[in-house]
Length: 257
Ligand SMILES: NC(=O)c1ccc[n+]([C@@H]2O[C@H](COP(=O)([O-])OP(=O)(O)OC[C@H]3O[C@@H](n4cnc5c(N)ncnc54)[C@H](OP(=O)(O)O)[C@@H]3O)[C@@H](O)[C@H]2O)c1
Image (cartoon, rainbow, N blue to C red; front, side, top):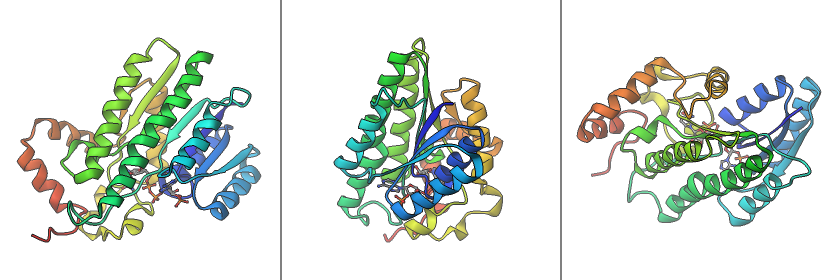
């Protein structure tokens, strides 16, 4: 039996990863801030799939929270075989309307926590000669979309670079770039999702199935839907001005001027 540590499991994509990996027989370490939800989830996964599900309560936008998860990833007596860095959030407002403290919290969670946890996990995995890391980025990585898009672009570049550096070590890394997914993400950010056409929404369970297939194939970048794959290819060719215009229209509040 192998062990997977997933961050942000109490909702959305992280919950879908936890459910799918438990169904496949992996023991789990579930990480998020809401202890009650985590404990209920752990009991449910244990009852349904017979796996061990440990709970690690941590706020990954705080040093103490990151350090607690780093310590778990470095524990060689209970090795983690698969790390999924998934926890994340969006901000409703645009640049200069978002308080700087919230921008910094986002960079801490999306970049610093991902860097430190990947390094803690991959370092231990490299010593064992096997393991994997999936870092959840976003299709926003390919569009000019404020600190959110910039932080996710960093996740993609960092993960693909690390994947190349560790190619012969037995440790595989993959950045996952979903488009719009039906989760708690938009409600938590206070974003009305009515500007997003219904055909653009992905189901979290299907997304995770496709992502794990890409991971098993050894991809370092996964964009699990053909429509979004086409969009990311277009984004590489289109002028930045056109990308800014598309990015402003879909899934964002109007600019204040
Ligand atoms: N939904 C989309 O359309 C979409 C698209 C592209 C990429 N993504 C990315 O996918 C990832 C998961 O998002 P989701 O859509 O599943 O969102 P979600 O439904 O809102 O779930 C977010 C999860 O992250 C946890 N979390 C948030 N802040 C945290 C913190 N400071 N420390 C620890 N855990 C924290 C939350 O749990 P607690 O509140 O219990 O801590 C929750 O379990 C994010 O990285 C997001 O950027 C989402």
